[in-house]
Image (cartoon, rainbow, N blue to C red; front, top):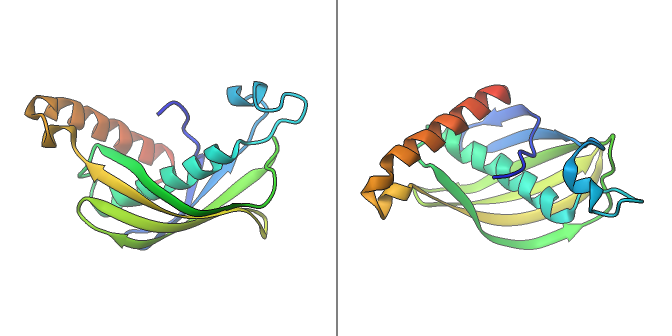
Length: 155
């Protein structure tokens, strides 16, 4: 993943929900290309921040059992307004289900009380070694990196 779009975990209840924060800074490199005269967080990155929050919830719930957690479906996505540098986006994700290989969520991102985006989405989770046993060491490396990232975020 090129962008880590989470700055802090404010609440996590394994198997149920997670709340995170994203502080948007003018220094973020994608803002140079995304409307340079009117920099805003791209909508797809708002969804990615929700996905990263949900993936962290899955990892904690499953005790980091999977190296890969990827978006498989997004629906009912509704964008409401812009997020500008200097804003702090609060992300709230609720698990609808978390199973061995897939999970589903409802998420929303807000500035204060104002919703910026809402979505329902599904994730797939797996290990690379599921299809190729020689990839087990890469799975371990990715899981170690994700555990370290979780610690940095306050888990």
